Length: 425
Image (cartoon, rainbow, N blue to C red; front, side, top):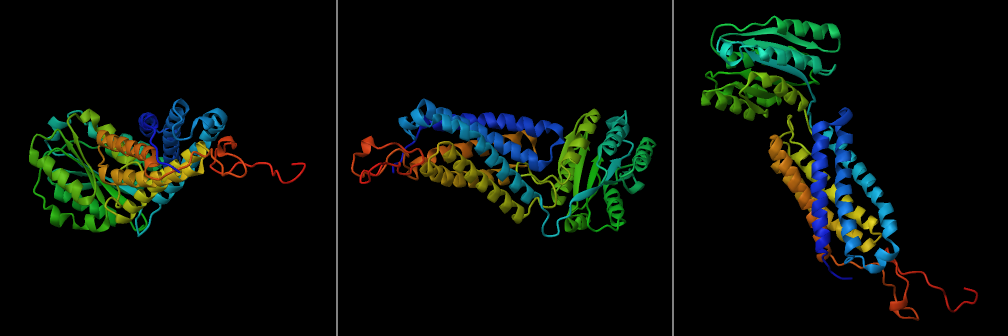
């Protein structure tokens, strides 16, 4: 049993983690075939296993410091065959943990109802002369799932419910909402955000299905007097997020108000300078509707939940452990499996903490957070052979002849030898 570090393995493990990050980000961005999150996360961690596992295997093939030359001569082919098993293991662990992470506990309700609150005040003639906000809302309605409900509230000086909550399970209902949105026009008057959110809550309260969660999308280009500590109390108590969009805001107070509303209710704020971009923003908000994956920020009522924070950290700990054990399987060495496995648990713990406290909903920042988590995961596993001693898996115990002539065993178990005390064997 000895402690060693293969610096080439550390380098290749980091390079493999970096390559896995690039492929993983493409996977998360493109989401091919509209894969469900459980499968998507499973594939993501399988890619991590491929990158790190391939890097470690290539490093030991070039410089077999940990496993020894006899492993390279006798068992390298077997290790290549075992690499796919690590991918399957990480896919399974990642998928199961994502499934657990998506379960709703503690009265958390999946968000199914969307209330769009759209500013129709006179200033919109300058902020959105082409009425792109209506086109964005119409496009979103056409893309929403059949189990969603949608409502539309418009406001200027006064707020009006132009479309109460209606299920989108039928094409007729969907066309009805589209027709209502197409009939909207910019009006005169100021910006009454307080009245708009009051009407939106009234719409939500009118729905008798208590098992459904709701979310509000509020778009405005202005500012109004609004006391977030008092007027958002019901939103906060019921866990209803208000995602706000500031369109062409020149007044910093307007932007600050919308940011405060989003932050207080657990929503996100989006600053949009060009009305033509509203369609993408509406879709982005909807795509994050109740989004809760191990790799992204929680955007629903569980955003500040200690339970789901613990589940994410535990999930990454198990993923790291599985990755370390998988590397031990690849090298067919039980001692390395223990060393890598413990190192994987430690690295998974740190990776989980990085994701939990580093993700904030901003695309570039979240990508860098995932990169850091992967690099930490790969680095600590590679370095842990210096912390926990391991055997090369080639030496056998002396029994009548020198260990130098004993047959090597790649798994760290004594090699079978003939019983010289029995004839015929």
